[in-house]
Image (cartoon, rainbow, N blue to C red; front, side):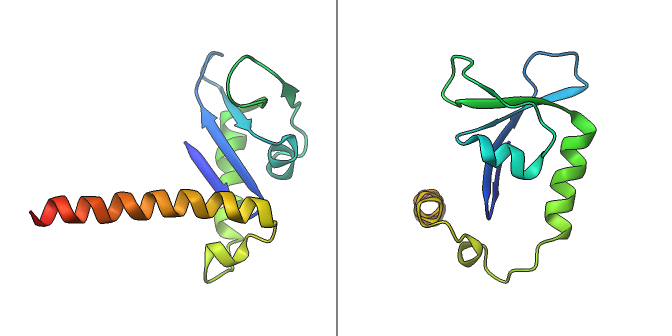
Length: 109
């Protein structure tokens, strides 16, 4: 699952382990640390995500729930303050908007 927060982008997967933990991956180590301050973040791993941490599954669920409960902005795009992150998120927004419009064109045909 991809999680886009105002100050962090995470990829969360069940990869290896015994099922009690999840692998939280990120492009920047501080993205993991912002959400999971006590995480042991490692670099590398041979995939496209340079940073990763194995975190207890319940802790992941609780921290994502906290992020949901703390949401106060009326517009997500406006909540992203870091210019480079905002630009990257807008490219994702644009791709998904195009996906929506393409689906609408095909659904109407």
